[in-house]
Image (tube, rainbow, N blue to C red; front, side):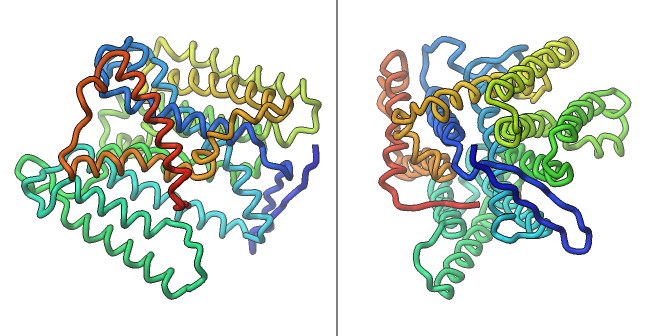
Length: 408
């Protein structure tokens, strides 16, 4: 496989970050990303459909187990991890130092946290009567501001570009000040549980930091993965929970499982793209990784259970094992066997994932503004199921028509 070695030296430290990655794009990663977003839209739409089998809904909060939809968010996290080595390599090839990489990671994390906080407050905890505008209009203005901040502009007028981004930031600040929540309307915009994008932001920050510290080597990343799982276990101990100081130090334990999944994605990318081994050895390494993740998940399950809501280690490890196997299959099918024609419909989601993720939420906010709802037949039974499938494909088609690209 044609490949190139990139290295960057941190100014004043002499630290090297060697990466050996293929020059060509790994098409299986794009297909995996597109499939994940397509299924995410499907399961999110299906949440409002009554009468479906239990395995098509998220497992109840108090259940010890997981369902098909509980695999979607981990797949998203896994793809985030798979992208980290390639994104780092591209920036190093463009001349970035390690410190510039760190700044990029911090800025991207901040963007994900901001988007996540706004979106989670638009879903729950708001007091519409205490706000000067409806939550639907507030949400639409938020998405408009977000588009102004993170859109990829095609023109070269820097003055106009800066003006649009500043206007978008000002819009976000104003909307944050206008937000009211709580029964009495005295609550302000708050992180709550950070929202999906916020959780991705935290796990991306931690995993990217470990990737840079490990200098792209698998053994330190595996150790880091185990340390995050240990951190989760320590945070659940009664002595930690009863101590204010220790409880504060364990405050990120809820993101331990998420970070572990992202690290599994990073490790999988390195297995398939940095090894000089022949193809069978790469698949063998992936199989061993999947088996090890599953075995470790089974070992921890009696202690912490399996729960997406609680982000337990077993849920994360089982999900990551499935993702490793699924990616290996897609890599064999698409990159090795050349069966890529069927992935064409996934390209909008693969190339512009943030926009595709936001589109259903923008549609929902617009429907709230117009006081519109779905007809009853689309919210129950087989017709509801068919609608969920059709809507997922409609969003991808809409993303192909909307000439807006978002970049964090």
